[in-house]
Every structure is written in C-alpha cells, then in structure tokens.
Length: 199
Image 1 (cartoon, one colour):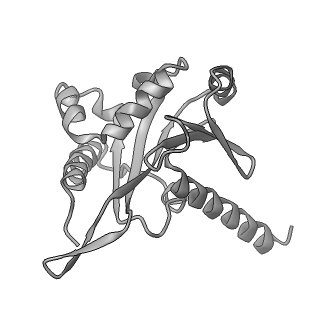
Image 2 (cartoon, helix red, strand yellow):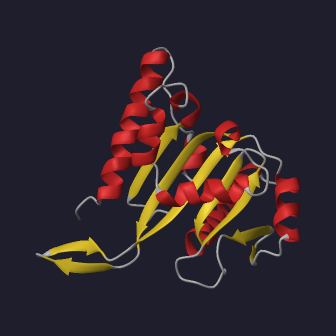
C-alpha cells in the first residue's frame, strides 16, 4: 500500500518534533503514552504524534504547522476556539491516525479509496463549559455510551467529523465510526481491568 502525501508530511513533522524533544531532554524520551495509543482502532494504518507545546517555542513552527498538520485539525482548532478554548495555549500534544475507507486495486496494489481520521488533542480543558456552549448553539449531537459527540457539520454527512472530551485532558475528534470504535476499546479495556482485579 502506498503512503499518501498527507501521511508523508505527518511522518516528516513527527520526526522533527521527536528529534526536538530528544535533543532538548536526552535523558527522557518524548512521546505519547501507551494507554493513549491503545485507544486507536486496530485498523489505523497511518499514525503521527506532535509535541505542540515544544514545537510552538521554535521560530519555524508556524510555517511547518501550515504544511504538516492535517487540515481537519485546523478545522477542529477553529471549532474549539468558537467555544472559548484556545488551541494555542490549551492543546499541548496531538496524536492522530488515518484509517483507509475502502481500497481499490491500482497497478496490482491495494490503494486506499479514501481516508477517515481519528485524533486526540491532549491538554487542559474545561469540558463542562465547552459542552454547555455547544449545547446552547444546538449543534447536532450523537450519544455513544455516556458521551455526547458534537458534530462539526450537519452530523449526517459521510465526511462530517465529531468531537467529545474523553476527560479534562483529552479532546477526541474524528469520523463517527472511528470514535465509536475508540470508545468501545476504552470500555472493553476498563472491563478487562475490573475483571482482572476481581471487582
């Protein structure tokens, strides 16, 4: 399967951010925790991480941000900003993955016919006030388990993205089917831990 141009850019950006983190603190490797990575659906074929807090301190970051971060994340930033969340100060780390939305044969290889996105923006949030704002705006919502997913668009289109707070440190965004899988993974993991501890 060929790498998409988007993924190639993401890999380049992630490599730069990881190098920066490694050179700034050689004794401690930068990166996202295994518990966060484990939330991503197993079908995730392309995965990237950015330490935005560290990257914002670099002069070249605005130009790199324009080229490397997914357009959907910039839409998500605007979406959060409309509710009073400042992505430039409240989002510290970003991890995202792309999942093939079907495949087609091209030159004897399987090539994705489209891509779906799922991402987690880690930082410090006030979920209650943000959710209250979006409810007041009467945004389309979907209930999954005990979480309310807010739609970026109409909430009924195939390309519409949704978002919710997993907790006060993780804002999750992406296509609905992937968010449902992420929550399924989270709840099955919680059940396994409870069963293991016998509670």
